[in-house]
Structures are given as structure tokens and as C-alpha cells.
Amino acid sequence: MSTTNPAATRPNQKTVWVRETRFGRWFLSTHTWYRYVLSQAIVDFKALLGERLPAQARILDAGCGQGLAFGLLAQHFQPAAITGIDIDAEQVKKAVNAASQLAIPCTAQHTNASAPTLAAESFDIILCHQLLHHTSQQQETLQEFYRLLRPGGILLVGESCRSFINSVPVRLLFRHPQMAQKDAQGYIDLVRSNGFVFGEQDVQTSRPWWSRRCLGMAQKIGIGLHNTEPTEILIVASKPH
Ligand SMILES: C[S@@+](CC[C@H](N)C(=O)[O-])C[C@H]1O[C@@H](n2cnc3c(N)ncnc32)[C@H](O)[C@@H]1O
Image (cartoon, rainbow, N blue to C red):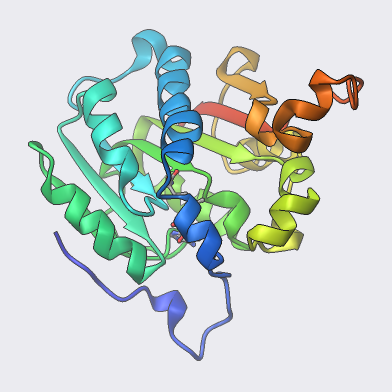
């Protein structure tokens, strides 16, 4: 386990990161997040991957936060090793602790996902779960993922779409760079335009209850039934051989 200083947080550099609110950081440690958002995404990614899941993969968890995905990745993906990176030093301290609980090699580093600090082609899978809507450097981050994956390596992108991020409760309780928000098609285009390949069958969109108006209660009483715009998207993309 190690911690390093991400170059992008040096004061003389352009601000690329907006820190999550205290509420947001707390929410990421709740059972609700773990069960209904993160665990569900890992299970869905595994189903989308099917036979393509590489054995003994070296996994990068980009924007690993507190390292909550480490145990899930170990359980569902049986990797050889996991490396977590996050730009928030406070989160990385917790991730280092989570990494120490695992039986397989697992490390957590204080690193900006868009800054080259890790060796090229050193990962078989990159998990990027709910990171992109937090950074204004989405192109640079995707380019860095392309560099870090071996040819044929797999990128798992899970994102919340603009319609959810811009909803009133989310705007009140959380903090995101507004100019970075995209709809589902925007994330598809972003990943494709950075050289990754995937088909329609590799994309899953949804409107889970927690992302709907009044946590889905409004629809239960007939309000907003017409709104079917996806709030969440999962993409399983590959770096070509
Ligand atoms: C919504 S949290 C998701 C955490 C974790 N992936 C999960 O699903 O539980 C987003 C995380 O991305 C991190 N993050 C945002 N911008 C980043 C960047 N440029 N490089 C690395 N981490 C970043 C934040 O610090 C935060 O921990």
C-alpha cells in the first residue's frame, strides 16, 4: 500500500477536481450506496462481460474512493491483483485500509486518473465507476485509460447521467462540475471517441428507483410516468488488439 501526491493537486496547476460535499462523502460509505449502486454495478458488469472476463486479471479501480469495490472485485472477478487510485487523499487513506483486508495483492494510491503515473499496458481491466461525472478532464482520463490497458484490455464505465446529476436533490446535496455532465449518448460518444470499441449489447441503461423523482414514489402515484430517459449507464468497452 502506498500514497503519492497527484501532480494535478499542486496549487500552480489548473483546478481539475471539485471535492465532493461532506454529505456526499458520507453517502458513499452507506449501505444504500454499497448495495444498490456499487454492488449492483459490479454484478451487472460481470453479466455484460460474460465469457470475456479475463482469468487472473490485473485490475485498476480508477476513482476507487474508500475502496468499497475491492472486496466485490475480488469476489466476482477473481483477479490476480487490484490497484486503486483516487484524487482525494482522505478517501485513499480508507482505501489503503480496505486494501489491507484482502487476501490478494491490493494497493491504493493518491493519484489523478488523468495524469500518467502508472506503467503503460499494465492492466487487463479498468473499472471506472462514477468517476467521469466528477472530472472536467474526461478526455485526458479516457486517454490515460487507453494507455494503461494492454491491447484487448477491458474498460468498465459506470456513470450517472445529466438528468440525475442535475436534479434538484442531487444539486443540493452533492457537488459536481456542471460543464462535465453528459446524457447516456454523450458517455457512449466519449468512450468511443477515445479509441475504445463496443457494440449495443455492451451498453446497459437504466432508471433505478434511487435515481427517480422522490426515490420512485412520484411514479408510484402516477407522476412522471412519461419520463423514461436513462439516469444510469454501464459500458463494457475494449482496447483493440
Ligand atoms: C462517486 S465517487 C465513486 C467512488 C467509487 N468508485 C465507488 O463507486 O464507490 C467518485 C470518486 O472519484 C474520485 N475522483 C474524482 N476525480 C478524480 C480524478 N481525476 N482522479 C482520480 N479520482 C477522482 C473522487 O475523489 C471520488 O472518490
